[in-house]
Length: 640
Image (cartoon, rainbow, N blue to C red; front, side):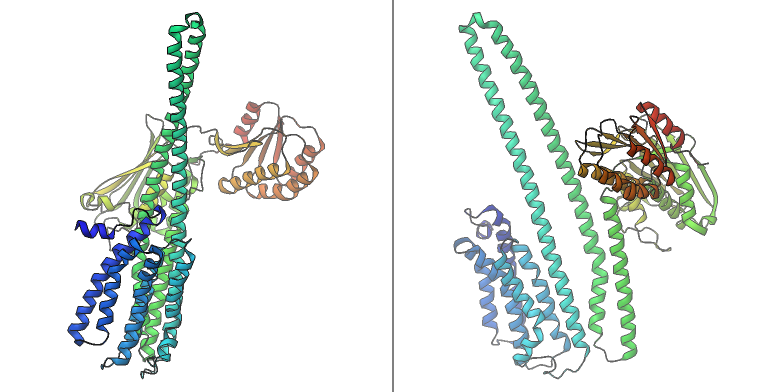
């Protein structure tokens, strides 16, 4: 076993960028050697000793020799041979069997070779990097030629589909499907390879930066220690300079403290980066599993149904086309679900606004529609904690999914009761509980899968297994947590804990040397603080950020501190009044506080134009006065 591992291990002199591809090539070559020997035995048992068997044996030996070729000759040529051997072997066996084996051909023999060729597309993406363009072009080009010119090659050698007596015209349609599927597969493999290499480069760059910084810190630390030793040695000889030495020691201590703080900060950054990478890796694994698991069924059905289109019966063909359409629609729905999950994970909402729970609960109940009439008693009380700091659409979506689940999985033996409460807990966070008396969940058997994607526990009603996954994802995106308590045939209680952001009234989402924008969650307003005289680009960039935030959060109020802004060029004044101001009004802006009492003509014109668009503008000399006015006109109010 040790000899085999040594044989498969790449050469020690190999560049580390190629160690992993070469190791994968060696392992797969050894596996393919075994598989080829197995195929040799199968062919011998079925057909006896036929002419191709020596070639098959030679190919097996070639696979076995590839690790040696990679180690002692050229790993690039070895990997090219590894990718091309299955391709050329497949075409050789396909043509030879159609010309020389004295057995009745069946139509499926013109498709199995294509699937092997499509599977071989994966090999170049595994064993080559994108920078190895020549090798990739050679391998992918060979596969593409055999895929796209599969029929012309067979016809040239007298083994074509119609030359063998087949007459089904739908064969050409299948050729198109195979070509399109191969193109999509090739694009996906190359795209995945590109993303993987880019991620590797980013991680390597970050690691190198951290190592360099660590080396710098260690060098500085060693230098400081050396200075300290020199000063201690000099202290014995220079007693008259004792005061100077003491001062230097104090300065050295301050440097040490600074370095220790810097090391601690860098270690914290490294731990945070590592945790983030682990989190993203886990999410990537879950998403990869979901894609491979849920796309496999529709794609397999589409391939199977495509093969069955060879049947000549028109009525049967029409049924098959209907089934293909259904499988395509199912595939489209799965892709939409995955797109929704990606949107949530993209963190497009960076700040938290004050969201009144009663208002979002009513909207969620309204979205449930007529099915809410099946609820016998809906007991809701948010009086103890009427609001949370979160994202309005997410809070509404959480309520909607939990209400929908309670209605879907209610018990047929009793009337449905839903009890909802909110309360403040000791750490100033908010706890929301939603309880129903429905069918319940067996947490011992299903607890681990409860919040996973596409997991369902009751099959007597329609569903996709997406609701609880979205609820957990949205709660965690809001920085909270969710737990569940449930018993079969008793009911279920979901408990959601949400904590407010650290600085509710100063959530910075844009910080530039010219201006800073932050969101006041208590008032649901945006504050823009101009730091200095701004350029045209800085002015427009800041207001585009304001407009984007208003489109997301629909804030009714905005405070602008223009005391340090300086003069605005006339072209930017026109751009703001004609382009940005109407869009701000359309996004829901109603109140503007200008801090600094500007007196020039532009601000007078701005006030008149704002009134025209339904925006009330007032000027103040102090920030607390501007905020107090906003509290009276723009602050969110609870809805009973």
